Image (cartoon, rainbow, N blue to C red; front, top):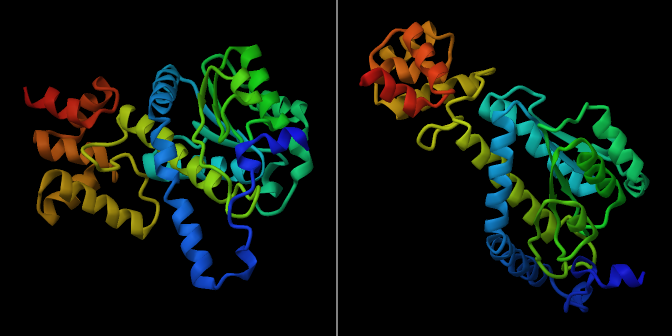
Length: 300
């Protein structure tokens, strides 16, 4: 109990009369506290940048990114990982969410598993974690045994180790090479870290995956050109992306998309470099999937 009391995330807020307030008053308090989160994340931008550099370097060498956590933290990691294939067209195993208790923990509480460091190690071992991979362990408290076990196992196989926590000088920081620690202060409801701490974690995860994918060539301008158009909404989005990237008319866009098998990158290069689909694919391969460099290479 004494150890928990020392944690910022477990401190008591000043709102001791919360249950006596009106609904609008409570909402204003929550909103005011939520406004503190972006500033806390901003303080960690240098550490986030270091983490992105490591992630990009490892993924370029064939590594994978693992988000590991329990409870809310684990669910946020799984969410971010699940969004990467449809948004950026990456293989489903490139970014993986690993949650204590497995898939059942996504929809119900399996909180006891988080106290088992061996479970964190075993879950990564089952995924054949190796030296090219990156582990981002996520826990608001920074002391979750499941995450500590995962970080220690990552160290044993040479994988990169990043901790995402909401307390300074945590136990997880001692196990990580890079620590991102946005300190958001006490929660409106004491210890309910699904609130500000969870919001901070979500913002950081957005940054880690998005900026990594930009640097891996998954974005051209500010367009997600590596999306996988698997339904009518995404097909329409693909058409819109090619239109915004090229300014071409609907007929030209549809011809390029049809010829490329709805490969958005290839379609853009075909139009902007005025080349065949074969040439576009060759240029993209030579540029490691970077659309801008592929266009420049074809138009020199």
